[in-house]
Length: 117
Image 1 (tube, rainbow, N blue to C red):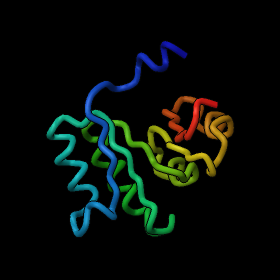
Image 2: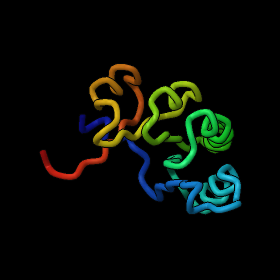
Image 3: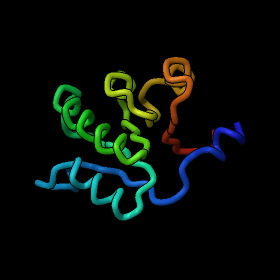
Image 4: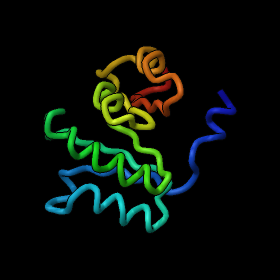
């Protein structure tokens, strides 16, 4: 476990949220963030359905892959698998971490928590 944690990118971790982005394309935000030193990008979209998130996630994956920066998808393991994201972030009410780990054994898995238990 320590080796896995030690291998995570260190530095600026950018979360792209279309609600905050306004009219700016997510991939342009990612590109600028990476140029500014971002070491990891996470797509967090609580507004649109997965069908609308898929093309955005694909474009983000392309931008991130070209720069060698990992892409994390929020909440949707199936979307992360579809775009070959580098990881997934699950919430308390999403898929259990153990299942995410089983389906993405080499991926970065993040989990929101509200307490230490």
